[in-house]
Amino acid sequence: MSAQASDSNFIAFNISSQDKFQKNQNLQSLSEVSPIGKIWDKHRANTDKVLYYYAKADEHYFRQYAWRMKICSELLKFQLLPDESEGILKLKLSDARFCRVRHCPVCQWRRSLMWKARAYKILPQVVTDYPNYRWLFVTLTVKNCQIKELRENLDSINKAFKRFTELKVWPAKGWVKSIEVTKGRDGVSAHPHLHILAMVPPSYFSYGYLSHAKWVALWEQCLRIDYQPVVHTSAMSGDKPLRVYAKHHNPSLLIPEILKYQVKESDLVGDREWFLELTRQLHKSRAIAVGGILRQYMRELDEKNQDLIDESEETDEVDGESLYFRWERQLQRFNIE
Ligand SMILES: [Zn+2]
Figure 1 (cartoon, rainbow, N blue to C red):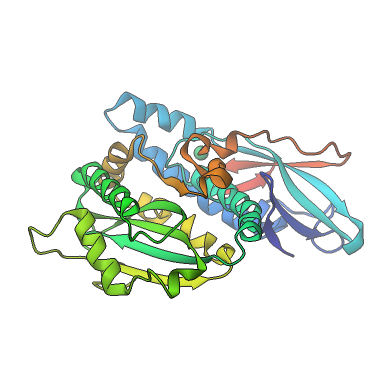
Figure 2 (figure 1 turned 30 degrees about the horizontal axis):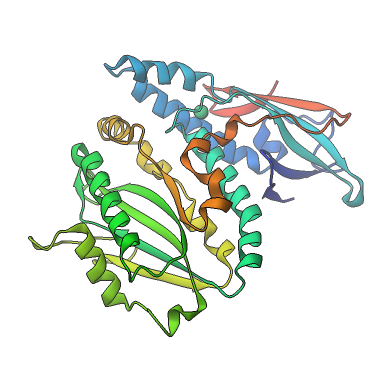
């Protein structure tokens, strides 16, 4: 039994036609049919939590989010596709209605899957076109800020990053920038940071190479924060303001890092006030941006296409049975309809 992200909108996963799925078997829930069921249950349960946060908010648009989220992915239609070679049935999502609210846990999960699937599809062409280029993964951070100051902080981080890319010493010819916001360890502050996937020419390691100390110095310079002592924190590397994470010939290895969630799902639930303020602060901000020569390849990852789940949910015309699963709010699981 396996789960995999296909290059389309669907997660294909396999169920054994002999022992796992038979029509007359007494299977009731999606999680009994496939391991993907548990994942659906988890995200959908978190969607319920988040929608309750929105439902009781003062802002009218928050209450609209709640309404949309309530009917998000309530009913999932899966097509059963025979896979004769392995004697199994593939269960493929063929229809579902998504709310597309930015911080909906289900939709955030789906969006991340789509982005990754597309990036995996696009990057091999970049590697073919630039076979000798190397790939760096860099995390640029600043000190934590109050959640109410998040937007302001993100503005200055983005400006600083732009300055960085305009410096002569900026080594990357192309890059993907993603913004992540985590909750500070104190439970009230926000920790915004940038993840950068950067492609550098093969000459970088002999000419124009930036040491770790140099990266740090340049980032500080671009942030224009030399007027005060700087406290950098990073969940990943103690108190270092930046880390050069890895260098690879194969950028695909870094895709899960660069295209993970903008806000961890665990940070979406648990603190209503923090979450509502996060929504206000991130409203209409960019999560992912692509620069340099990668732009032409990765346009689809850019903001205007953030809503990848908007794509047609149609599957190929295949005769076959379908199964429906409905979200049971009380039971917190998808059951066979
Ligand atoms: Zn949703």
